[in-house]
Length: 286
Length: 155
Image 1: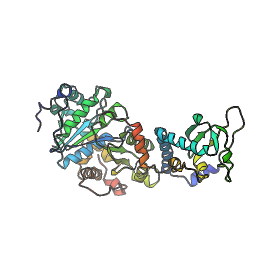
Image 2: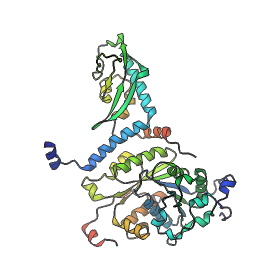
Image 3: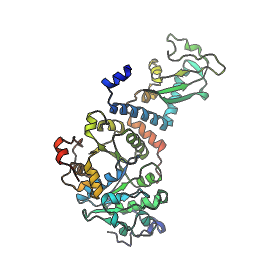
Image 4: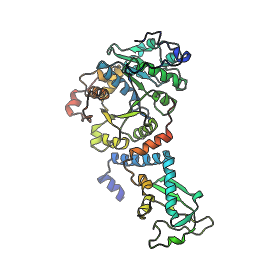
């Protein structure tokens, strides 16, 4: 285990990167959650997949790479506990361990928040990569919440990742942007797909692209499908990721996604079913 | 009016419209992002046409245009003269039509190109044109190539 002094951020500038220890210690997986288009649910996906993975006992760190528009902390309900952010660490103003926020609900989950008052161009790509590599020595999963767009913030977020989850809603704009991002990620990165905000009733009536329509274009391994349902909004309102809700079908969908990432669930992703009349009558969340 | 009634009684689901629009726009996107593919297509096209006529290879221009329901390839290929050998039993591909004899060298306007090529069965350019004609699912390979051209994630 590393001590906190070893992890002092100063090394990022003073010393060359400590060489990764020879392969006896397996490195954690670094997965970037990205989409190109904004507003498709990257942050919500990162939060819930992270929570679901950590709930199985895996050590998970979530990095909010959306510098300037920090949101992962508030979606997770950890906004009051953030003391330092990612740029503090990269610039040596805070120790990495001090900047990692713990989640009482899920002991193996940590958050490294983005800086709200800074810009994406302030992030040094090499230093960010080095920090990700350092975290991979200590965590089973490093999940990076990528900012929208394909500029510097995107490049920073993907630099250390060897896997990517594309979040795409069934909309023409989201699919087009996802296609572009897939092209930018290239062959180096293993890419999977989460179709977010599907409305089964609209798909049935021919008013929304289906999962098959989306994936006929993107042609990616499907990790899961998340319904557009009030529970997700309510959980975000409360700062309680829906993946923590054992009774929620959407929470279950996130847990299955986590299982597929970990390789413990080999089932085919389910397409969310339409809410029945009774669901609507009694299933309403507050 | 007829269109209006048709729309009321037999509306096309908007998801079908979305699918079709996406297919077209992505085809254009990919063509725009794959200059090397377009270049090699252009070279093959010139090679095929050169079998029949002398063309001004330096001033050939191949572009893609999104039209109503197709992405059309527009090849602007100046012709310098006929080749004697071109008087073969088979006539030149029917879509190639001679432009008027104006001052600039005569042009060949081939649109849509897929139809033009399909009419010349011995044309060796089939492979290069295939991605354009087979508009629907895009081959995985092409995206890879595009990625190598386009994406340069900094390390």
